[in-house]
Image (cartoon, rainbow, N blue to C red):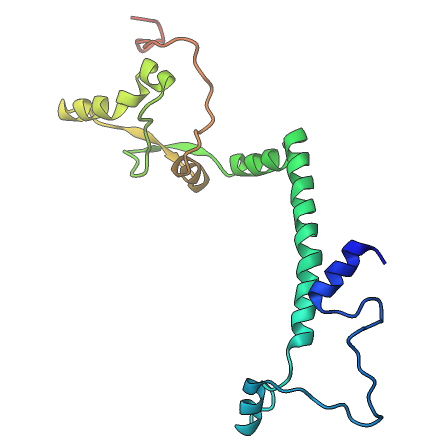
Length: 184
């Protein structure tokens, strides 16, 4: 027998491949049962269900732990290796999350709108200053006719710290057009 397997079986108190050196030859007849102090107390109290020795259940639990823990570690390692090579799990999760994001334009102010706070792009293009700009416009009497409404999926992504997908501009600016679409 392999020394590692033998030591493992000894630590589990299991017989080594059908041979138990601790076995004692007994006379034919019913085997005597060992009872612990708690088992004797349970039997005296009439509770025979809790008096059943639990050594076989503990052995089974130990064997399951010895087999399951390494198997789970190997499985986790294989998933991590596959994820670092191809990012399949990340792509699946993010594409699912992106599929639940949407926005639409609706009349009036939005009660759940979120504005960026920091970031070089948001600061450079003025998006981080939008709340102050909108407050000044409202203070001057300008009505807010329509604002974007985010789907619950998009709100959840923003609350979770992810940035909503957007088409990045390469330059900032404001174009003021007249009724015909010509620049003023």
